[in-house]
Length: 244
Image (cartoon, rainbow, N blue to C red; front, top):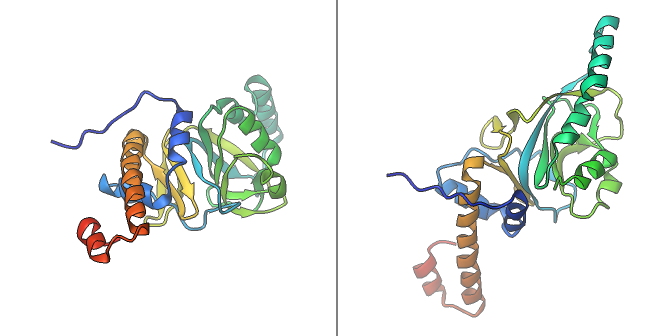
């Protein structure tokens, strides 16, 4: 019989709070223990500040470059009318934001323009977004860094918005560059965890199980740290805990 995967009746914000107590190696070990080893993102992703911990449910966004895109007058008119009727894709994205979500952007490898800035971050945070992960560029970095508790992981910063992009899909599967695999699939509702050691994706069906395993790991490690600090003999350390 397979392992029983536990699920908790808690809010996304409660998961965010509990995951922020962990570190990357702990999450990775918990995932590996469940046989999940292909969800580490590329080392190209980095936090704007080293102490940032990113945790939350993925709100996935697919972007497409506007470089070289030419619309006929008829196509432009049709798009303008659609946006008046249902709102621009960016507005629809913001309307999808909810407490405990992380905006996750797949730019299709387009690194020419800045894709997001401080005003957009401020708007998203005001409606419950707890951070951002983008395979692309952000700008207004100095002001983003002044935002309280809004971690951003990116692959670059650039000042220019010209060159352009448009949102094509919201809350559909996207693909981000991986570390162990070429791409890592990110589904809406998967959980994002990032710290100084990198970013990992926790499949949504395992989010609570990984969290509970991590809490057990942290409790055991804290006791182990205490004993080592207090002078536990090296022979006893390796006899009880194995290789560290």
